[in-house]
Length: 274
Image (cartoon, rainbow, N blue to C red; front, side, top):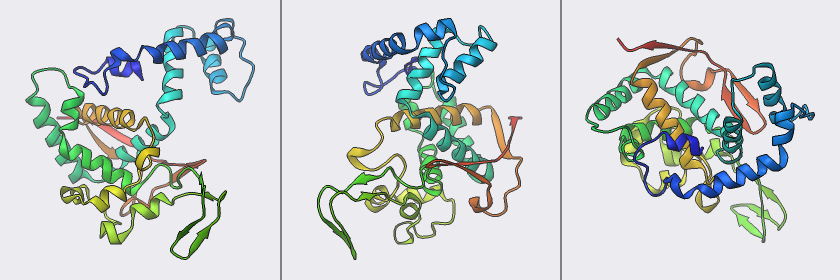
């Protein structure tokens, strides 16, 4: 994560990595404590551990990843929640590839904006791309990576409509149902980023992406930035289409459920911009 931000110029104070030395120190300590000796000796034996599998890959392909790069991989896996980020990115690319008119408008915005930049792309510039943000919101609304939210315990008796929940009951939110509530979204089955042209408070409160309120995922800004950088870089140079046949909207797309996550199982075709 820190390595990623070092590659982006003009970071705002909210993203300034100069004060993130504690992150490197903690990860380095954990690495030294738990992995360094086994990593260098090739002696990780827990075959269910992702780091064991990574170590085995490194042993079979020496030189493809340095020890520092391994530490930064650990850093990302620990702090950036790469499973959700990858899933959200997959759905974003799927929707952009499926809806070519949206891709054309997005490419036009990216081309216009980047052509006027006098310095490398910054976080401030990314956040000024209005349509880009709307496309990301609409993709997350249509296909939340986590269909069901992480359960939380009720701490006191609660009454919601006709439901009575005593303390100790686990409650999860159906993110898909919230994101498709026609009372808030109108025609919720249609992929339409322009619905956010007139975003209402109800829409902001009813969009489940990385959680809502103070319990929202702390790394959501990291995930947003990952996806924006990827999409801007990709569409500035390539067009993206689907190789997998999909009829209608995204309801017919084959998916893979991995625990609480849902990913599209599709192939993309990427061609250089003419």
